[in-house]
Image (cartoon, rainbow, N blue to C red; front, side, top):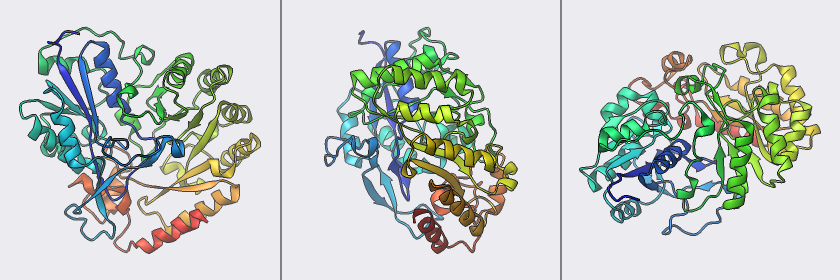
Length: 446
């Protein structure tokens, strides 16, 4: 490789929050950019500030709990305005000095790319950028990701990055590199064809405890609480055969046994997408475990699909239920009716899935939501014979529910993304109590 080829450093930043856990969470977009840069001959380095397997961390089994596990955490002062929250606040990820040492051990990069996820995690992005700036004062830093896209103006002012890029990065990455390094090259893939993309560079991690899979991008639904259509306005889908080949690649070359689907609509048009994919996994004798942390659409589940998912090795199924107030849910989404929910649960149980494998997400903390309504939803899910899982509602800019959320919150959501933290139930009224939350959690867990 030519030594004059630009050196690009990609960084997955720290999380600052009241709680964080690795639930099959990887910076897939950033690692996709890493593989694209490598494909085009750039020198690529990667640092994961959330690395659970850092050499200086206490050893842990990467394959326990299907690859999931806790991040290392360091206590921090709570952000201004949240001092009264009765919970501990921490930096999640590697120690500050480990990050600094890792940076000093590498050649000076020509460009730094840093990603961002939840909007209220931005203090962690700020701190990460501060360390990068201190270490490499002459190197430009470009911020992308979800926070950058949803809170562009805030990121421009507060992130500390030299530039903020919005939207999917694959279409822009080569131009960004050219702008900052002067090194231009033509694309060797089609940004509008997911099957032409290289696989994300998961091999840059110290351990590949699991692999996330994305078989499509964008979502045809417009749920009031979700920003998927804003973040990915164009719907794209991979060929099922190419997905099976990717699974086989990680399974055979890196002995990966756990895969997590990141799709927003995995089972949409199942006969032409999920079904041939599942059949390919079965034919290929791939004995892996598959998980759906982003949830699947309930009305797409049928007896044949439930049986295929079971045979293919699905172990953790999450259903996007959100609420069982079926007669009132049209303001949120049009995902499912009560009859469809009951039928889908029956189909999954008939296929052999156990209660502990099937969980239904229930949104908690919506504007104007009553505790009684949540209790009823929990009881309904438990009565169906599966597990209720409370999903804390996050107010997200550019969603239909944002204005109502901002109006109902006891915080000024418009002033600072830190107030949208779902751990503090920001859209509950001033009479909110942690005791009521604990009671709901206990009810869901019993």
